[in-house]
Length: 388
Image (tube, rainbow, N blue to C red; front, side, top):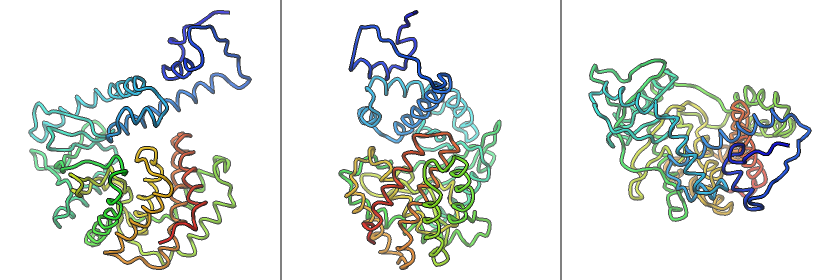
């Protein structure tokens, strides 16, 4: 039998886990009956997606120490993962510096703040798109809101007076950088949850002005559930949720759906898209997914996001239930929700998580699909405790 050096075969984080049990000794690892090549491919895919998630959270402001706790890795492994991920974007960084010249920004100082967004000279944000329709929707909504003095990152036109630049299959748009940053921890900022309800209601009121334009994206959560979401989950053999439970949740939503107010919504409400400066709200960003849909979608999406990232935001289930009430109370200071909307909240929440399950199935991201299913089950078990 030929011995191999673990450093040449196993990931560093796995070696560190093994070292908790044994060091400096030979270990025989038996062959499993399952297809080894298939298992290794799946393992590498999971590690790849995990590393991408770690890098995204690092860009969002989560510390290396917290990331190590969240992913059960050493700080040295976290630093290595971040370094490797950063190298993947080096070519894009150089491209961004060249594209910046279209706005007469030469020798730009470039810092990545998201996988598709870059800070330029600490004054601007340059965002990269592959979908021109998404880009143009974002530009249109930002322009309307900007004209209404709503705090958004104003569009900066190029030296040839264009709103965006196209180059080699990618589209680039430059906006003014807003003051502030996203909230990373809620432990010392629980009062912001009610404020987020107020902030979201103000955005929904402003969105009414955008609805005067007739070329907005019309969408329906109910149609999605009966369409691609059902197809994705059923094609996966109903592995995550059985068909009967799926039908029950969708049927409960259907009974209320026609009475749920529909309007333009943000559709991607999380703290990363709502900026705060010294504890005070400073602006809205990222309208890529904005669409006409049921308005409580935004509220449900936001509070679910806090629950799904409880390990990052460090909140308990009891605290989450309080947050739900706070967010809805803050929202209703400006906009009164109907009885049907409040009744539909838990079913909208569960449908959103099933939507995520279907999405991650398509992305072959088993870990995230399982996480979405975990949130679905938590909401399902706590339906009676979601009192609005």
